[in-house]
Each structure stands twice: as structure tokens, then as C-alpha cells.
Length: 340
Image 1 (cartoon, helix red, strand yellow):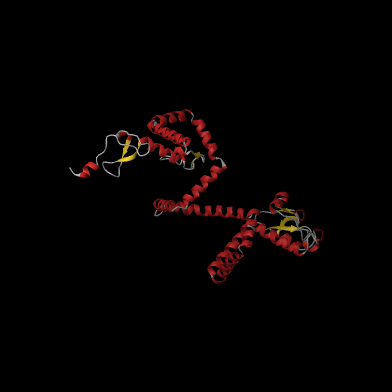
Image 2 (spheres, rainbow, N blue to C red):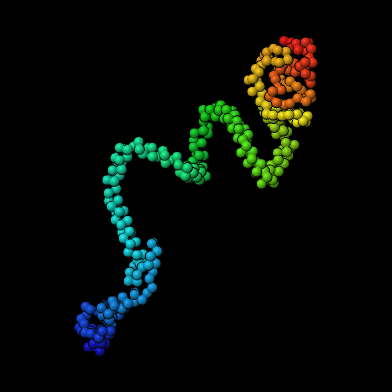
């Protein structure tokens, strides 16, 4: 045989290089790098060296509970401690038990909820009324409404149910004036609140350029577009007709300010409720076809005040005849009332 064959043979009782003891082949680990070879140290010496090497390492910090992990606990999962391992194993066992008994657990929950349905309804109602839950649901709904998926659904729904549907078009056309009137009333009510006025003043003060640009654009459009000008004039005229008491009150207050008269808030509706449709000059009723005026008992030109106590309803003709005189200065002919 070749000499190489004899040199590669393994002895039946090799000697450990560290403890220098004769041991059997089973006490040594095979050398995976070299065929037909064994490691020079026995298993006991190798394990002792490995324990000393691990003990010399500094302790690590558990990534879960931030506690120190002893050096001898190093292993495949050396970044967590034993307590964390126990918790994770308990979670795995609980999840396995849940999966294996899912149908049974679902049936138990369903039976319990059916037996306590009223309690669940009350709890669900109370839960949805919480401010933080409402805010979260509103934010989630707003975010969802801004998504392209929701917008595409809305477009498809409108096209499917309304486009080309004569019945829907007739219904929408019939309800449009009412909805616009409701929206207009809502906007007028909102614009009249002190909070909104304060908000508009604050916005215009913090955004002067935008406010100026908006006003300039409106003025240019009014000057260059006859259709827009006619539309605005018609709107102003309609608003004046609908809100005649407000316009009258504004004119009277301006006149009173010019004459340095005493001014207080005047409600012509309250005056009509107080005095009724009765003219205090001719002592006759103001019929529906008569023109209704509100007259200062003591005229502003005679240093009268603009207050509810100094204002009374009259016929339009009686107010014109009285002019800036006192009631005591009128003749019997001036107080004859309307001709019809």
C-alpha cells in the first residue's frame, strides 16, 4: 500500500491535545473540513473552552424588556431574555389554541351576544357617542371621501341613477328652488353670526392681498360684463324687496346719525305686534291695500329720537301730509286719512 494511506488512518485511541488523555473516537468530533480527520480536542475540552469564551463576553441588553442577558444565555435568539421567550411561547400556544378552536369559540361568542343583545346595543351606542371616537370616524370618513376610489364610485353612481333619467331630472328641477332657498337662508344665518363676522375680519386682516384681489376682480367683472351687472342689480333689488325693514332701518339710522339723534335698536315687526295695523294720525285701520309707513312721532328734524317708543305705523298718505310737523300742528283736514 501507499504511504499516504497509512498516514491518513485514524487511531482507535487518539490523544487529546489539551488534556493529553487517550480516548475513544466517540469522544471526538469529526473534522468537517478534512475528510478522515477528527478535531484535535475532545468534546469535554471543546465544550469547556466554549463556556469560557461565552463567559468572557460582555452581557447584552434585551430588546424587549431592556434587561441584561447573561453571557451564558447566548444562542440563536441571544437578543431576548428567558422571560421574553416565555411570553412569546405563551402567545404562540394561545394563537395555536385559538386557531384550533376557532369554530367553537365563534359559536360561543354568537350565543352570548344573542343572549345579551340589548347590553351590546347600549354599549355600542355609548361607544359611538364618545368625542374621540366621533373625531376618529369623521377623520377616517373625510380621508376616504378624498380617495379616487370613492370619487369614481360617486361618478359611476350618479351616471347610473341620474344621467339620462327623466324622472330624476324632473325631481331635481322641482326641488332645486327649495334647496337653493334653504341654502341661501342657511348662509344668511351663518353670515349674521358674530363668530363668522369675526372670522371674516380676521381672514381679511391676515390675507389682505387675497381680499383685495377678490374685490378688484368683482369690480372689473361688474364694469366689463353687462350680464353680470344686470344679474347683481336684480339680486340687490330682490334682496331689498325681501328685506325692506332692514333697508328702512339702515336709512333711518343713517339719517339719525347725521342729526346726532339718540339711537337704539328698532324692530318694525315688534312695533306692528305692539300697535297693530292702526294709523295714529287719522285713527283708522291700515288695510292690506294701503301703503304702510313707519313715522317718527317727534320728527328727527325736531330733535326726535330713533327709538321704538318714538316710532308708530301710519298710512303712507298720512305720513306724507304730516312731513316734519308735530301731531298737534296738523289740521282736521290733514288728518282725514286715505281717500279710498
